Amino acid sequence: MAGPQLPESLFDVIVIGAGINGAGIARDAALRGLKVLLLDKGDLAGGTSSWSTRLIHGGLRYLEHGDLGLVRESLRERDCLLRVAPHLVRPVPMLLPVYRQARRGLWTIRAGMIAYDVLSAGKSLPRHQMLSTTATLQQVPSLNPEDLEGSALYFDAQVEFAERLVVENVLSAVAHGATVVTYARVDKLSIANNRVTAVEYSYGPQGTAGNREHHSAHAPVVVNAAGPWIDEVLSNTSIPAPRLIGGTKGSHLIVSRFAGAPDIAIYVEAASDQRPFFIIPWNGNYLIGTTDIRYQGDLDDVRIGPAEVAYLLRETNRVIPAAQLTSRQILYTYAGVRPLPFVSDTDEPSITRRHFIRELPGIENLLSIVGGKLTTYRSLAAATVAQIFQKLRRQAPPCTTHRLPLPGAAAANFAAFCQEFKQRSGLRQATADRWLRIYGTRASLLRELMMADRSLAEVCDEETGALAAEVVFAFKHELAQTLVDCLFRRTMIGLNSDLGLKACEVAARVTRRHLGWSESRVAQQLAAYHDSVARLGGVKRV
Image (cartoon, rainbow, N blue to C red; front, side):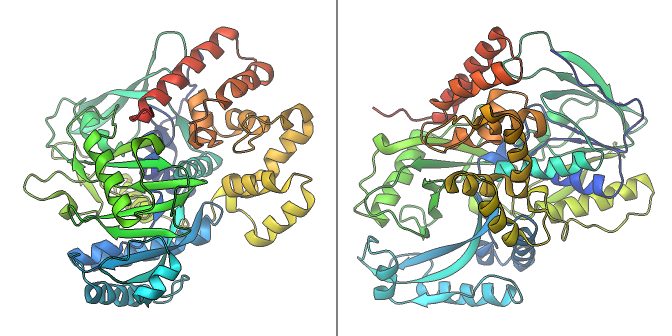
């Protein structure tokens, strides 16, 4: 096992956690000229960032709590991501049906939509429409018509593969000088004279034989962006820290197309607890979620519970009676913990979704990121980097992440690039479409790799059409270290209908043939992959 080779010079900032917040902070800091070290105990996007509802939304439900500032920020950031990451973030129409007994009546929804449009002024997505009962059923004929009073039709945005959003932020950070070490578990923050003087960590990827290697890194500023694990990181210091995180679990079901399945996303209030949930076309299947339950369990083994499964199935079948979904139709499930601020006396939906940059008494150079979400990661990063420069007593250069495209959108005209790529790549239409939606303009690099070795045109997965070149590309150019990294968070094969179980053997053969993996390493990686799939499922079809 080859350990990380860090440069001898000090870093300006060490960022702990390579989810969307840590990745965004690392990118912004590197773009502004700071020497950055990014550490994560697992892979990029290996935690909460992969287990969201995969929306870049304007915060419609935050209006209910009067948080206009967060709605305005969310809408601004949604528009920004549509510009700088058009291959990953795309507009999605949302139908919000309103039923007679709902807590949020038609007039309440209408007022909320008007406010949403006002706050969206100048943004790129269309304004809402209020639809009659008849017009609503024309949009989704399978909706339960009983007590249906009408609906609102509006637009938000979807990030189909949030994992790729994280990966591209990190790739951009690396391109601007950042050092990234994954599978680097922080074991201790050494404290002296009210400062973190060293970050001590141990390195060892999942599915890799050998003992963990121990390392120490140093920087004048440390950012704890470990998401739900923030308190765990802080527990590795000699100074007592107050509890910062009071996370709630959000769980989702993935099902194939079902009777009455809508062609657009549905955002509807559950009858049992009045909490809104989604039924969303996603990745050729349907995503149903989410729940919102306080969580006190193992953060490294978060799974959906039987009551959550029953809740999501029951509410979906109520809204779309023809569905008649049971656990037999569930392809897989996933769950994650939101890194919300700790509060002891507030119901789960009322816990603020704002982010906070916390400093701890007695430690001058440590910032901890509490909260945050996919939609507003960029603005959170900008605010954090501004504080880093304050800590360094240096003038902060202007932030550029609001206008600088992510690597997969680096083209003068992204739409024109896509059209030309399809015409000139020589790829099948389905392959070209797939590469553009996952890799964006980086599809050109992928094609070059395949053209240099035509054996990489081998199909790895019949369902997605993924090619062997993608597997090699993940390891050579996208910081993947394990088969799980490659299939779940680079090629996205692992999120197909069978969690990549048919494709993993083929992918393993590719690594053996093209990357020189030994038979024992392949066997270890396949075992680790199957372990990850087993933990992910949560529900077994019978």
